[in-house]
Length: 423
Image (tube, rainbow, N blue to C red; front, side):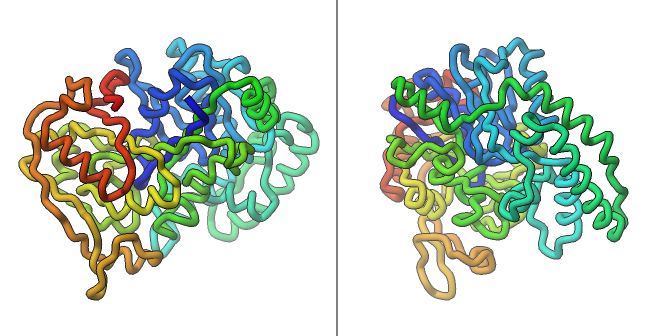
């Protein structure tokens, strides 16, 4: 196995955690390069469900090194809760198998307050998780952010700068009617977290390059999905980081020529959480999944919006990420469909569009054009070989390959690790 990036081809929630978990068997190092605890990667292993927000999915495999890269924005208190939760489930977590970049930016309490206030007062809602991710990336770009090495390496200087920033934020909060924050209490909580995280903190760029020189294989676990990318997504209904394959390089310090394989992950249909345009949204399909107990956000618990497969989205995602192959998840979700509509292109103002428009307003106005494919009307959850899938399911997958010019290499037919067909 060569160095591999796993990227979502839709709006997140594609099942990347499961695919990363599967590929981890042949990897040595699993890297999380961007995003924050607004992500939620669900893995079912040996009948147990694990929902991971900051820690790479590789933590569930013994003998693997997990790395949180410099592109991640990290809430120290939330990370410790995640670590403790895994330990309570008998998952080993220590500096032996988890390292955190000393350059990672920190999500502060005032970031969460700002996030919630901004979302509540936007004229156009973004659908943020209110975890403080956007304001943290904003401070990073504004060059006033806090990084892990400050919290761990110089507590006195951190406290002084943190207290000054809290005073500045409190003036703003009071002007808009928000309660002020207690700098001393919050600083002590963060410093306590810093003391616990100190053994995990290191120069992860050096670690990753050392591992590559040893011949170790790296697996990059992208968070969110292509259409939440700050540049390539359905702006402004996006996250605040680069969720495409290029973000794995900038968020880890591993150069592009060291990447050998990019795997795109897409559901056999389409889902979205939060606000923003969704051309193939279908409320009847959503109701069916929700009644089955499916399609609720791993991070927020919100009902996901659901729709038919949009090949316009996957086609563009394949272009901007350079997908070498596709992993199709939850094919079994379509097992009982008589017919399956697939969006092959859009129409807008009399023009045919094979790629998504840049404008969110135009995106909201497009008309999806469907081709209806026959369903297979049988249970696929026990299928273990690609060639044993129903004929119509194989035809469905072949159509995806044709439209995206990308080979399907993996197919998920259930939530468990062993319910993934390798082609």
